Image 1 (cartoon, rainbow, N blue to C red):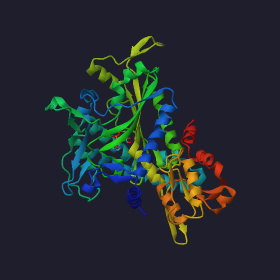
Image 2 (tube, rainbow, N blue to C red):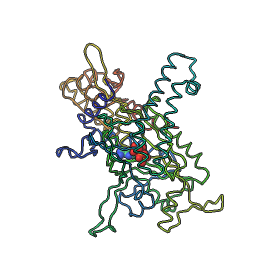
Image 3 (cartoon, protein in one colour):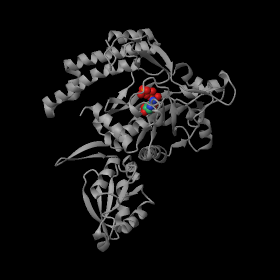
Image 4 (cartoon, helix red, strand yellow):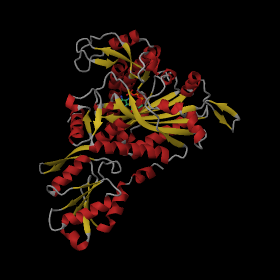
Length: 513
Ligand code: ATP
């Protein structure tokens, strides 16, 4: 099955089992806007909970915030979004399809990266144990040729994007012979800038003065509250402010399900540090964030770093954590060293001092900021892609299972009576009623036990408890584990403790150290 086919299956599965629906579907949907269904909304809450607890609960030097979506319009002037939150767009004249010009070039560059990966895989196979990847990358002529090409394109992108040279970017696309990925046509329009912010009107006043924006990132809500938090919490620099919330971008190309949406949710943390220490904090946060992804259970081979060659004007370092989605490695999270740009700009436009008096240095300064910014929806998609499996069980049997980390699963434990008679439902409901205070539970008595297991597999329920005739005499039940499909007999009075040990999010947090 190709990656594209498996992605289609994941999207269909997400809809069929109540994870993600197209928005306003009865009206044929709305481009790149999605709703989370009964299972999806719980999974999403659990992802947010995992992030929030890893940030705010585990770090005594991080506090939370929940700022409004609407902000004073000057916020976006200060942040640079009014003037520069643009994407360069290009249309293909034949297919009438619209693309982000920089993404077309980056996707083209990705082909050379894939070639390098293939060379490395071949090398590893050929040299076995003695394979030295670093040496191979430095000396193999095919790798070198592809790397030279990547460097050349990177320079081209930097030179054009950095200077806002749209004609140059158009020329780069032509020089590289980039064709419309869907039709192969190379007949392109000029490149134009397109601002991604949605605007609306505040109150009943007409005219430009009342124009406000739906925030395109949550970060600015944190910056404008820097002093409020500093003055009302017991935090001292270095410290961080974490926030989860909706953000809105009028994305030009939004074709990859919930990967790129026009309304989405971000989980952002801005860490305020003493100027000059930002490099160390940047490295610290890189390490901590990668650890968060690993603990979540993503395979090492599905995660990678991608250093930004094109640094935004306010950043002195930036890197993405990329995840291997079925459509290739793409950004999941950004870690940015944003200098004092944001606080400095807000200080300038608001006329309010946004500084910290550092008693150790005996002076005031505008703190520098290291930001970690991750999309909740992209994390959701990564969890879903990682979890989705179609397993061949032999004898012509198969099952579709979502191997979601137990702590995140929408239903953590399902309870079944083996049959709907002989007092088994009553005994099963007793178990269920005890568990539901602590876990998200399901109770089912319809259909054969095999069918009930399959249904729970398909939504990622990690444990199923079955009450059978033996339960009535020896007070034990079976607990069936989703991934290995193994069954164990355990005493009824230990069910709660055993389930807790296996599904508790605290276990994940403890592994973060
Ligand atoms: P991209 O290059 O993919 O457009 P970006 O670099 O503009 O992303 P940031 O501004 O760094 O993204 O936003 C931080 C995070 O927010 C991203 O890593 C991503 O997970 C998430 N995100 C950004 N745009 C979207 C979107 N349109 N839909 C869903 N998630 C998004």
